[in-house]
Length: 150
Image: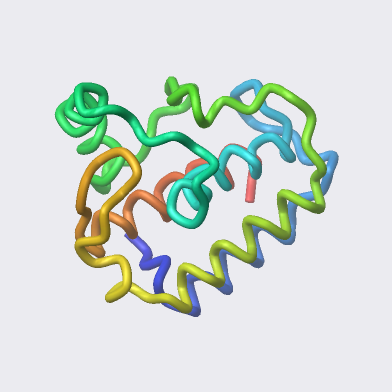
């Protein structure tokens, strides 16, 4: 898996994002391109903002037991997989705004670096290693960039 904390990888991902246009169509799924980027931004919102309430103890345990491994391992996501409610984007979004937010989050994450994230508490899964954080960030974003053909 490519390392989202590596500047060359972030530059490559930003290049892929910059190939998207408001008219880019998904190869699968229901989201339009602006919704997809807003959806991808949720992962970073959970790290950098308090916008999303943290799950309670019982829910966090369920997430750790049943959701964590598929999210943080290196196995690619299947097309049309279900997503958590916080990640559902059903309203219209501004393409340029979501694109810039996503790029800004990627740059911030890369600049903070893997040491910043190693053993950092995640919103839903408890502490994650730098490898688990990388897999969480890169795998999800790569899945959706492939969804839109870039």
